[in-house]
Amino acid sequence: MEHNVTVLFFASVRAQIGRKEVELKVPEGTTVGDLKEELIQLYPEAEDVLRSMLAAVNREFSDQETVVPPGAKIAFFPHVGGGSPRGRG
Image 1 (cartoon, rainbow, N blue to C red):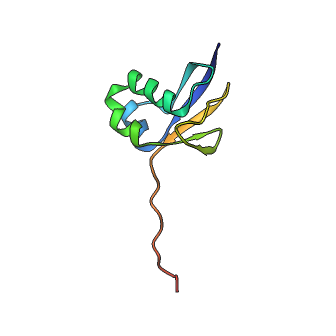
Image 2: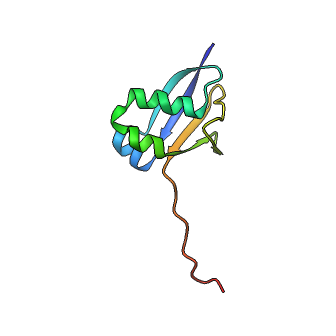
């Protein structure tokens, strides 16, 4: 059985793909990793960027093995750098 999900793109991946979101039908049991592979098939020009992106499923940080539930919103965004150690000590 398939279900719909909404994929949101941020920063460099949005620039590469040229869209801020896309609706996809995915099979039951699809993981974040599976979804990344499907997106790479759809947008091969963004492969390098997609492979380095972090993901959040329904606003929760998620790893590659997280199963994407029906109706989920999955956001792909770059790693965020940490702050400086100024002011400590």
